[in-house]
Length: 71
Image (tube, rainbow, N blue to C red; front, side, top):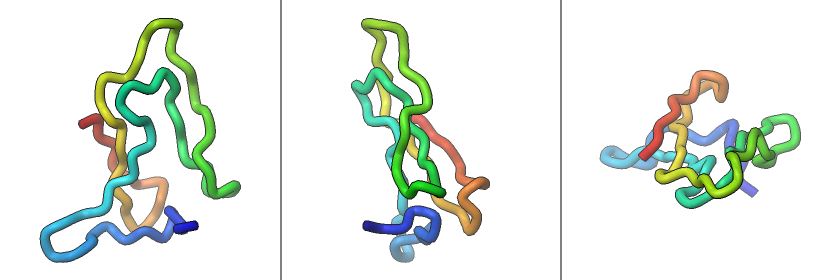
């Protein structure tokens, strides 16, 4: 499995890596737990609600400084 805490920001000169934490259509928010190395449930939405966009973060040298983006 890829160690997401060591993922570089850039894939090549034109592309960056993005980690999708919460997929579009999901009813649960996930967060990466670096100690366990897995995505864990952060919080569920109320019944009947879903996230309309993918929730992603872009890696930086330190995992705590990742930039979050809904796209």
